[in-house]
Length: 148
Image (spheres, rainbow, N blue to C red):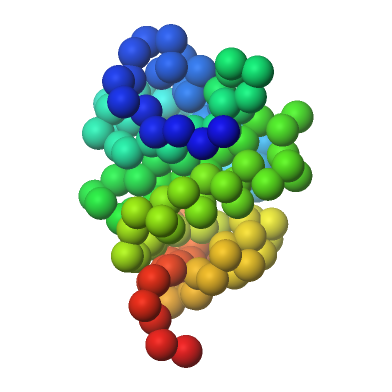
C-alpha cells in the first residue's frame, strides 16, 4: 500500500536511511560506496523537507521515493527483496496523480532505472556530468499534458 509520510519520526527516518544507503550502494556499483556514506549526513538534513511516498508491506516500509521543490524526484528506493513487485511503479503512479510535472536526474550507467523511467513516460531532455561523481547523468521529465 502506498502512503505519504505525515510526520517523519526517528523510526521512519532510520528505516528510510537504511533503504536509501543499501539501494544506492547496490544500484550504483560504478560509484565507490564511500560516496554514499558521505552523502548520508546531507540526506538526514534534507529528508524532512521532502514529500515522501512509501510502500508498506506487513507493517514495514519496503520502498520509498522523495520529491523536493514541488516536482523534483530525488529518487526511488526499494529493498532488494521487494524489487520486481511493481513497487516503484506504484510509487511513481501515486506521484503522477498529484503532480503536473516531475523531473529527475539518473546516471547514464543506471540502465535499469532509465528503462523504468522511459516505460513511465519520462523523456530525456538533457545530459550533463555530475561533478561530485564524474559520472554522466540525464535529466528526465514527465509532464501530464505533454502533446506528443
